[in-house]
Image 1 (tube, one colour):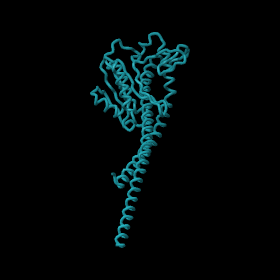
Image 2: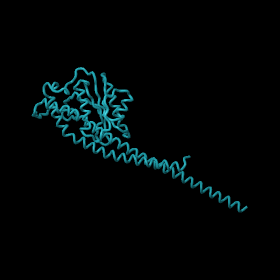
Image 3: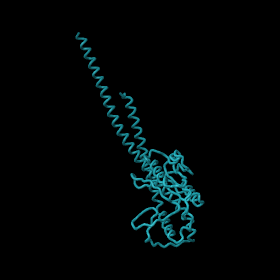
Image 4: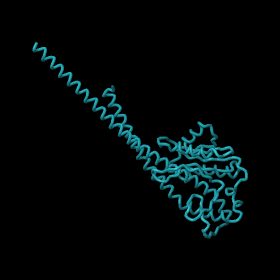
Length: 300
């Protein structure tokens, strides 16, 4: 039977753990709000840039306007940018994005290289002996565009130099505090899909749009500036969304851990009270038995 001293130490240990998990929950709640605000701040520019690209993509011969719009006839090499976290204690966040990425990669027949954001993703891919081209970790949260510009430059230059024929982005999309979903999508070559009215998606537009654009200095110069920047912006928004998803997942995981710790502490306290009560009862029975024996001895 466990001694009362051991039970007191265990209760104290569980209480300390609950305090740590509650603190981590509070920190994650603060960080997720900042990350969501950063995502929302990039939305106006992304929408305007997307409208310009959609308009250019509708022009005759648009695939020859810029290398990032050109589809390769033969897919020889593929690059996957996978975004994960630097730390654990976030539930199944890191495992889910890795599993989703590897499932989508099963359909590829060409060699695959990975650019990994986050130490956890790097470690998981390294254990599977996959080809890691580059790794970026310890990014601030929320990150600025300058913090992730090197990733966009690496991806754009690799595609233009024909080191890769397709570039995919794997990240976790933030919807709500309780809902985050892994996403795996093609970002290069840049494609526009047409869909009926009412259907919404990242790269979907509708045929009824009649926007008119005037380009200055010219269409080519605009493309040279906006297409690489928009590609980097997609990666930037994916990193911000992944950071928000990671903090939300960690907040929920720490909340569950805190609740479990409090429940365990309550059970341990009840068990400790029972043991202590049993010890007091035994002591009282020993005292009563000793007193009775003493009285019996005196009468004799």
